Length: 397
Image (tube, rainbow, N blue to C red; front, side):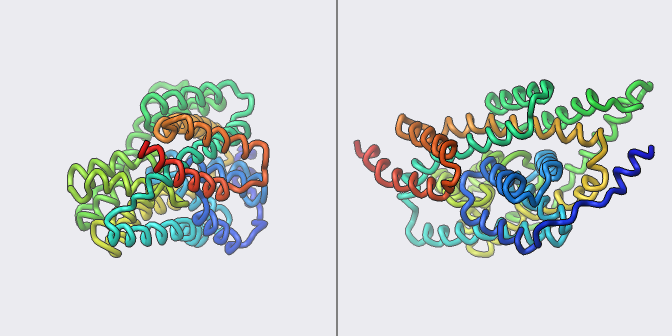
């Protein structure tokens, strides 16, 4: 009892950085951070935990756990939580805006060019090279996350392997796998007292089901576009790529707002611009209803993930050091990293289409491995240039 009390009353470590330093970092990451959610969470770990030591391992793991358990874009939620760690709601708000704003402005500009030019032919050529380089970047991020967080724990390695395999086979990220992994590690490491009591498991499962029943909330009074993208931001779990099939079914199939070609271009825009992949909703909104369509679509997508990160954050901060919570977070983290590793394979199947893209992906990983000071934007720029030269030649061959 006294041990628990001392842990809960222990004051948080003071910040070694200012709020504006964190905002500036996230503004930069949103400007040059290529590679999608998997790469972005890797950048945050490398820069904020390893290099600058602004964020502790424990806080980063808690952020990853919330980002995986709550619906919405993975990287944006993690950024919001890291802003919350030392500067609470004000920090979460400014950091979230700084992270999303650069890519939103970029896709807005591209959307204007897209409408005026009737399409962007060079986009496929750029993505040909960039998509392959991104695989190398993501692979290195997954490797670093795995080596730092899994360690030699056999249970965590088993969870990692299962999560990676499920992600590869189903090509989706399953929320129940993350929850199950957290519960498993919790029960193995810190068996709760009620486990041996009659009806204890039933009561606990009922409480979990009641908590998850919040998914039934339906924003019925919103406009059609706001309702659709709010739903997308509220109910699609996993990384930014997980939202793509849902958007396709609604934007193309159900509402007919975009053609198949326009939707593919929208996803390509999100992949070749830095920041969160989910910013493609801003591009889609612009194509559907102009500037205000972009604003409404982006706000409707990101506001739920902001609220679903900030609201549970105080409880993680207050109780996050308890052994049971630490065990649960470790299990979720192992499953999340496994899903990230599996995503490397899934995305690689779509981006590596021939031996040239295979060479680009391998060369990217080797360069990042051997030359630590090489920045990802330089690699992405080189890959884009290769794509612009090589892809047209292959298309006309």
